[in-house]
Image (cartoon, rainbow, N blue to C red; front, side, top):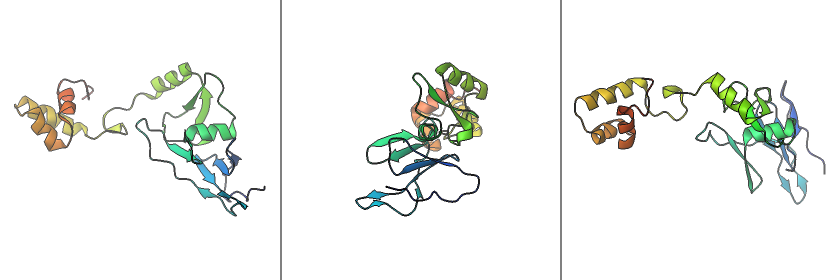
Length: 176
């Protein structure tokens, strides 16, 4: 069976995803499919939607009915090859949401930790799961110092009481 021609996108390369018929990756960090049915492949490729970033900032993609994979793994497998034993996918610029091939490589756990130290842990408002701003954190601490209960503060900022307690004890947002 023959695949349809890849979409014509300037300066974008395509590679088939190994072990998954009808799926291709592009070097700009996207995955494509041409549906397969009993008559063969469809006439065109369509982009698959990756889920929004998971709690670690990584995108997830569904291949077929059963395989759910990290988008960066699929891109590397399509262009570079299968993951070598003991290797991890590394993001060169430290942005787990940037899945362009030029930003990805296979590397060891030590290299991944070195990258993490180099790029620094995202703190405060820059963290992808942050619900509060630095100004709100300072306000939380000020209200607690005035004697307001943690539950009242939590209700005001729409966060859990435990989060307020950890902010006040400086277990969270200690850099502020």
